[in-house]
Image (tube, rainbow, N blue to C red; front, side, top):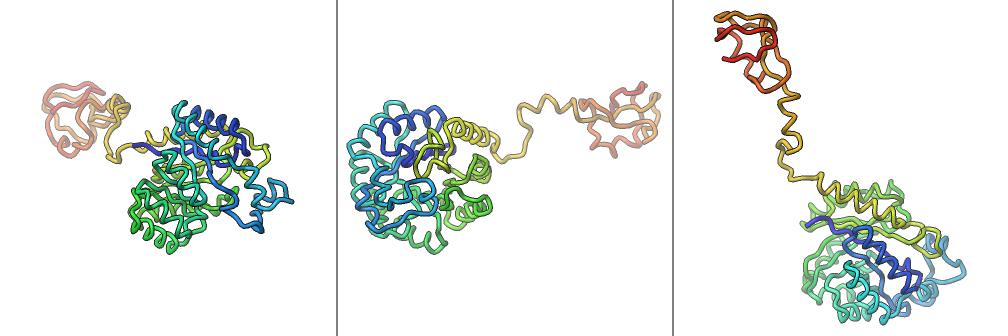
Length: 331
């Protein structure tokens, strides 16, 4: 199976089912495997007094608290039913991150068979238990985590019956500075935990997720939007549709380029072997029975004669016939 590409629509629909469907369309057009949203009941997710992150304050109404912001960004359960059916209809996988227990149960009833645990829930014991008991595949984001956080979360998930677990390296900042990406940590997680790893990207542009694929990522998640200039917390750190398409195309090309790991001539280059390699040839006229020496033989293209790697076995032998300059030597 190739790299799983998740186009993270998140809340970039701004609470509009119509925009959510348009995001699904663009994810499909870009070639993503899944379009992912976020399902939550704001009252179950945050306290009334919860403040917004700095990046959210910059991109939304600064007078709002986090609760009010989320209320403006949510879709209802009924709208998610329609949205999942729409995704099924256009042929793209539907995925949504749940942020509270009620939403987990709703998505389970909706028929979701894979779970994305966001970085902020990795220390939420009852949440982890509820998802684990679904006995289905889990993608676990690890933003803001230490190795100990990951170990403890994996222990809970495995003890409670989770299906296959994959880990996503992630930096929870929007946008993420390149200096804080630390892609090598993704590889280290794979070595440490023996699980498939991937990368959830919040940097600007598409370079880092492409690099992550080259380094072995099995899953790539990337935020996208219809328009970066829209109001909302995540638009500024998201790709626009054409950029998402470019990213997916680049990932698919990198998948092909990674190959098997076995060093051997590629089919496309075999035809060039004899053209660019050399053979042992006469550097001057040589008479039959004349001894072949460094003074009368050399190496030149093409490579369809005796390989220069046999040089020492040719030197000192006698010519089996007359050779003209540039003739391929035969022994």
